[in-house]
Image 1 (cartoon, protein in one colour):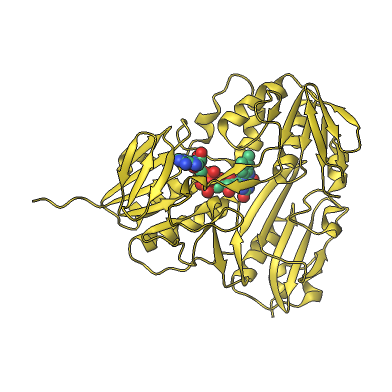
Image 2 (image 1 turned 180 degrees about the vertical axis):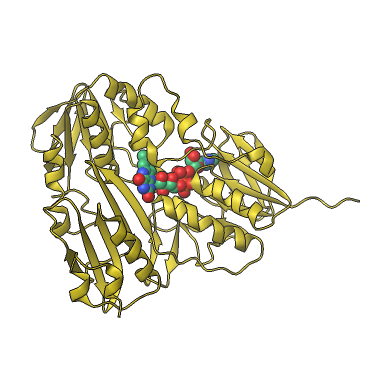
Length: 405
Ligand code: FAD
């Protein structure tokens, strides 16, 4: 009697799911891998959706430029697209999909996140979200026609979309409920210098005022004022796509993220979680982290795959992300809180500058605006928990590495 071949089922065919499949093969998993995702497109990279894809012109097929360079057949990965996972029965090791039940030996949850919608706007044709290739494709005609656009939310995605829309020649207003852009990510002393970026690009930024209603052709703000808008783009955050795990025994946090441990294991046997859908405890930063950035969806899968294969690897990265907005390359590495000491490195009203956060004597995080060398050096210092001399850190004329004690 032949033994049944073991199977790893990966749910979600975005960056984290695809990288998990690749890492499993690289690390020596020889049995079956099933990778399923609910989008119809071949797996693709998401960051270009708020950048080059929006400006690609009507004729080019964007998926060809951004699909992952992975030969799934050659890797022996059973890729099932356009297939949604509906539920998980961990007691029976069964995944319920729209097309039937799949048995698994190990399962990796990599379902990413869904963008948060503005209440009451579902189904309104002029209201757009920006998460998928289909979302970006629906926005391209808006840019091609140079329509008047209101962007709701001055976060990373809102700023990137506004950049592209201005580049296309649209009239753009960004409305933000908080008193400043990127309020959830950066302190006021930093974001104060980003306001000017909007103005310089010809984007009107209205802060401290929530949207109360969207009507055909206009956005109504809480103070009763009305902004004309042929299209509205909502960029107010994303929540882990984990609703399908209800009742499965895989525990979720209050933020809907899968509560993974430091090995990226979930609370159910042989079920792991990676990428935007999962939080994990970081010993490095002393708190649970939910990271919605590309590098986390690249790095986490190696740990998850190693542990699927019986390893005992801990996941505790130095988080990293970048954003391209208003002609600037903005990079961030590490993690800071309001209790950390902020040091400016360079003049933030100038073209390029860096912000560093110190926790005690150690470098905890860095934000670099068009200073990629600072970012690269800081990332190394943060990774090795280096103690630094604050006076040298604050001197933009010296390499950051020279500040290490
Ligand atoms: P996802 O990429 O969301 O993939 C999850 C996949 O699972 C999706 O295809 C989803 O449809 C599918 N899925 C969900 N539920 C189910 C289900 N029940 N059954 C089957 N399939 C399911 N990060 C940066 O660091 N820098 C950037 O410049 C940057 N730009 C970005 C621009 C945009 C427009 C967006 C949306 C994100 C950007 N990011 C950026 C973030 C980065 O792209 C994400 O962190 C990364 O894509 C997360 O990968 P993931 O695989 O965890 O999730």
